[in-house]
Amino acid sequence: MTDISAIDERYACSCRLGAAYTEQKTEFSVWSPLADEVHLELYSSGSTKRAERRVVMKKGADGVWRTSVSGDLDGMYYTYAVRFGDDVRSTADIYSRSACLNGKRGMIFSESSVSIDGWESDRPVKCKSPVDAVIYELHVRDFSMDENADFKARGKFLALCEEGVRNTHGDKAGLDYLRELGVTHIHLLPVMENGSVDEAKPTYNWGYDPYLYNVPEGSYSTDPCDGRVRVRELRTLVRTLHENGIGVILDVVYNHTYTVEDSPFSVLFPHYYYRHDGAEYSNGSGCGNELATERAMVRRFICDSVCALAQDYHIDGFRFDLMGLMDIETLDLCARELRRINSDIILYGEGWTGGASPLPEERRALKHHADKTAGVAMFSDDFRDGVKGSVFNERDCGYINGVYTKERRELIKSVLCGGVYHPEIYRSERQCWAKAPTSSVNYVEAHDNHTFRDKLALSMPKADEEERKRVNRLGAALVLLSQGIPFFQAGQELLRTKPDGNGGYIANSYKSPDSVNCIKWDDVTRYRGIVDYYRGLIAVRKAFPELRMTTAEQVRKIRFDDLSGGAFAAHIGRLILAVNPHRRAAVMALPEGEYEVLADGERAGTAALSSAKRKISVQRQSILLLKRKDT
Image (tube, rainbow, N blue to C red; front, side):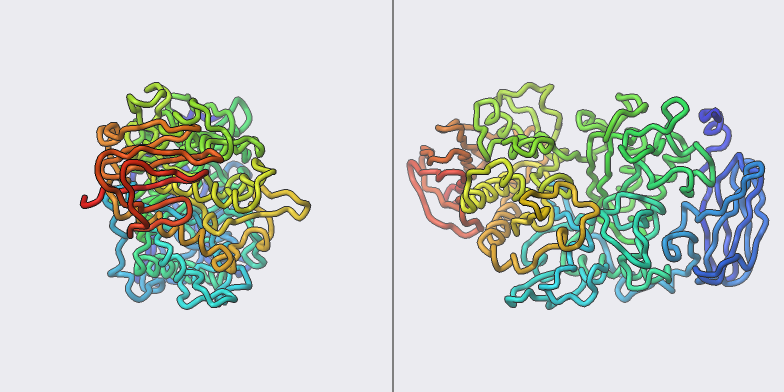
């Protein structure tokens, strides 16, 4: 095994890598310090069987192989042929910005060839604080594969750009629906080149199988054979959402690659990019390998990659998959560099791993290290499981679906405070992992595990549909009215379900067909009341800064009253939020004065629904949000 520390000490470098294009020449640079020989291979198209030109590259003292090719190479493709001893293999450049079909060759292109109208004036959306965001997690194919909505570019980037899309009842779908719903940011499941989908005959996959990190996935473009098309169409998606006031967050997967031995990283420098557990590759990802983020040139690649994506596509944020497999130093570097590009960028991730890892625990970007990760927020599994029950036990219940003990009530108060320690709550400082509400991403549904609707069906088998709807609205209210960053999966507001055809439900539908995964747009009409409730809660959140606190000091000014049946009330500045998970109503005494009801168990919005004095009934399995009149 190569002495990695010696490699980093001798060869780690900061010079430009990749293909640098001008009309007069293109300069190629690739880091492979222990290779015996490297050739540049040039192709006129992505389908040409053999390279039309092979150019010897020269190795520098920094371990970088370089060459310069005269002439205009706009539109050509390239690979590197790398020799270690008698073994010669060709690979795409890990720094490729686009590629041919299935990413087998990188593409050289001019900026003018990928330009779109309005791109020069496009800017990321303004977001003063991450708690001002309302994040909607979405898979590109899920958005537009339902035949009950009249999309033209089904399953493609461009479907998110279509206006005037309607369902079979004539109600708004697609982009018009998103705009009306009021979400501020779309979180796209991975949209960079992955290894599990054949772009010539695309099948469904979530995309957590990274192959080339800086290349848009060809199966989402209208022409996966032309690398420029996928760049233009992803930019068109971003520009269109920006024009509608919606930011774009990319889900990125720097914890592992799709395969190891034939990945571009292994061809360029065997073993260097991956962690090992003895003689084997470590598997903290559960996918067969881990990228060794703590190594100098792996760290540099990850930082270069997110910065390139932020600049090339005007990205508004990043979500890091299995962030607990990334070292804190790498994550901090990424955060600093990204904020130089966009001071409003939103950064968050999964503060856990998929299994055991040799990366020392104290170096990992884990949830309980949230205060060390340069303001990168973490998904709150405390919120998720405390509210609805463990995702690892489909029958397990949480606060809203049956467990309203004192202990669980205190947990819900805590997550309502964004996971921040509060002296009125019976949770120790050690249990409260977030140092500020900006650290906590609050959710009850994401692409992983059962949908919220299906979890409630499994954990509340005796409940009827109306009760489950009440509980869904209660969960939505907790997500959208708590301190922290609200997050929900596309379709949660449509009671999204993923039946398995045998009376059960699919928990992880990463390779299920579109018929299971796609958003059912006729549900906009079917569940109009639920959709309106989510829309109203979003409007309320945007209207009241008390629901978007940014510091622990602000949060600790919230005051609590315990009500009957496990219910409680939170006094949040001029607002009072009462939460009642029980199957019977609870009575709440009100402070002196008159109050307007902004949300109850069925309706929500910025206009008063009714008024109240002295006391009010909080209906079963619901919330009440009140505002003191004339404030």
